[in-house]
Image 1 (tube, rainbow, N blue to C red):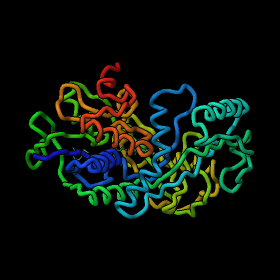
Image 2: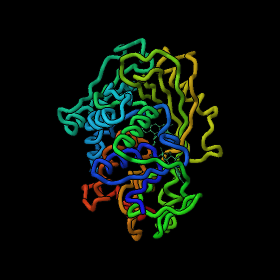
Image 3: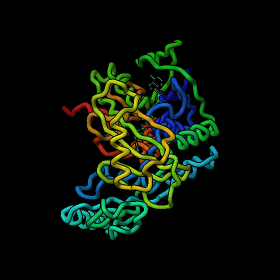
Image 4: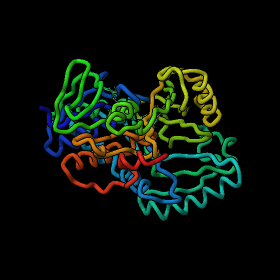
Length: 363
Ligand SMILES: Cc1cc2nc3c(=O)[nH]c(=O)nc-3n(C[C@H](O)[C@H](O)[C@H](O)COP(=O)(O)OP(=O)(O)OC[C@H]3O[C@@H](n4cnc5c(N)ncnc54)[C@H](O)[C@@H]3O)c2cc1C
């Protein structure tokens, strides 16, 4: 009989394991392919805040998570060694029209109100760094924030996996086939546990469906790539739905597509070429840089588009830690800490929309 079994060693499963071990629990992580093998093994790692307008509990949760991430990663790096490539480098977004500039001005006011003194937003001239963000793409200037950060997703998973091992966590390579009151059925036999956390990324929804009576989410495919280009000590760029992200660990990442319908879940195609072309228009300095890696993954998107964290209704001892969708890396440590508290019977005060039953009530 295991104490806590966590299905999935992506960013959510790893942070949940790290937090549960920190509380003195005994943890077995089960992953069919190893740490960071799913969506968490990608190349982007942008940690961008939600817009500060129409504030709500989810945005407050993410803000506090973003502000605490550097310290949390520092703790994991101290335990496991290595670097996650984290840095609060900020974000620049080009402003193409006077209307966009006016909206950005209002947004900067909302950011001052919501982010307090912790971070800010301002409008810079189009040529703030002409060799990085093309002034022609930003005729009305650049909206710059100091809250956005970045990390290297694969390096982060490697740090966390070592940190989990350093705290005594165990990892088993096995595939979970189903869940039930009797525990977890693996392809190679049954596993009994006091508590099970489903952190299997986009596959969590299928694993939980028999217990919930419904699919509580779906996979949304994304494609991205990593360029072999010197990464300047400048903010990441985001424009026209496209990121250009300089990594501390080397290279510049570009992405990403958002695909609800797809036939090849992990393949890359011409849609990624189109993303790269948009990125080159934003940042001509990267045009022609050799591509080191083209990559695709499946984001876990819960029905309510919020994270799905907590006990499954009607399934004693089974918890969800999934649904991070596009913001998993910025909130993973906070999500893991919250689920670890729930495993110990505590109420971490999560936004109500994060509860599994809240997602199920969405049409
Ligand atoms: C192109 C792209 C760009 C992205 N950019 C960003 C970004 O900039 N910032 C950000 O925060 N997020 C980003 N995301 C989203 C982020 O990558 C995901 O939300 C996050 O990685 C999900 O983490 P997870 O731990 O929930 O799931 P995963 O990382 O998918 O982990 C699930 C794990 O479970 C294992 N598993 C699955 N099924 C089973 C089973 N039956 N039995 C055993 N093991 C199983 C898998 O092997 C995997 O290791 C991006 C995603 C994509 C695709």
